[in-house]
Amino acid sequence: MTEKEIIKYFNIILLSDKDDKFFNIYECLVPLHLKCDTKKEREYFNDLVEEIGDFAKRRNYFQQFKNGSFALTSKGEKAKRKGGHYELEKHESDKESKEDEILNLEGKLKKFELKIGNRIIINSLIITLLNFVITISTIKFWEFDKNNSRQEIQVSKPINLKNNGISKDSLN
Image 1 (tube, rainbow, N blue to C red):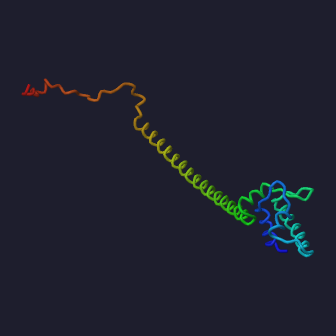
Image 2: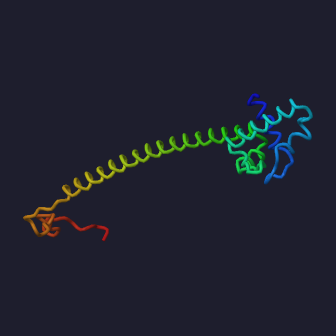
Image 3: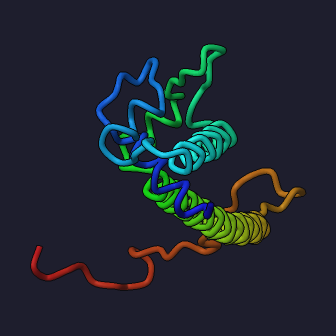
């Protein structure tokens, strides 16, 4: 029995109108999809039930009880909503690829932020250094003479207007 055949009948059981709490594989397959009239058909069905049960338990789709009945697990219910085993695998694969893409974008964003952050730090240091140099040079430029504590008169010899013979303004 091939895996493709097992998955085909598994999907029939999964998507059938059954009580998802407690169901029997026989009730899902025999009335509509398989016959169990001959000995060969019954042997095929018994092998199929065993293979489907192993497949479903291994992949955590069904939970089996001591009386032989099954119940859907949360993964089984999700597979039923998605439309079967292959659809769930496709959904999970797409989800993983989207998560990988998001992680890749987050990594690129962090690299970009780090690059911009480093540029901001370097530019801030340069501006701070320039401010410091300008402040130091300004202080040197405006430095006062420490020996001269009083302000000097800027004009040493004031011009006496009366003595120089300068005439007054004729308009006044």
